[in-house]
Image 1 (cartoon, rainbow, N blue to C red):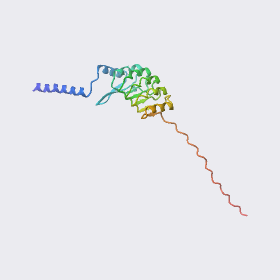
Image 2 (spheres, rainbow, N blue to C red):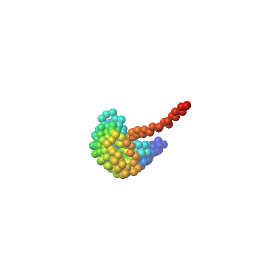
Image 3 (cartoon, rainbow, N blue to C red):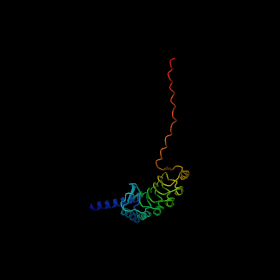
Length: 207
């Protein structure tokens, strides 16, 4: 009886592991090492959902120094889907590490040191849907690099060096994109012409 129970447990374990491998492929040694490095630097790594093993990597809450070198492990994460480096010491050099991240859909680069040169590394991110460039030095030339990102739906450009002409050119290339440039200054209210008051009739003098 004991042997029978033991055999059943072994078989159930084999079946369980088989079904897991079919539904979700376990991370490779390189991926495990990359995730460990990110966490060691103060970053966070988690799967998007229980049934979605793509990865969300966030550095913006890290207490320590996060710079270009901190992004090196990302090269070993082919399932990277979301990345947030908001407010960190990231330059164009650091973006080299995500240029092959074909599954990346959301990218937060706000208040980093990224410039037009960094946009060159993003033009191959064919599944990118959301990009935040608020507070960067990106100009119209940088936007030009994004024209091939056909899935890009939302782009934030507050406090950048982008002009109306640059925005118009990108919208022409990506008609469905929504570009947010911050709160537009309120237009001064037009002064209404003063209405002339009707002249008061003087009471007729009695003769």
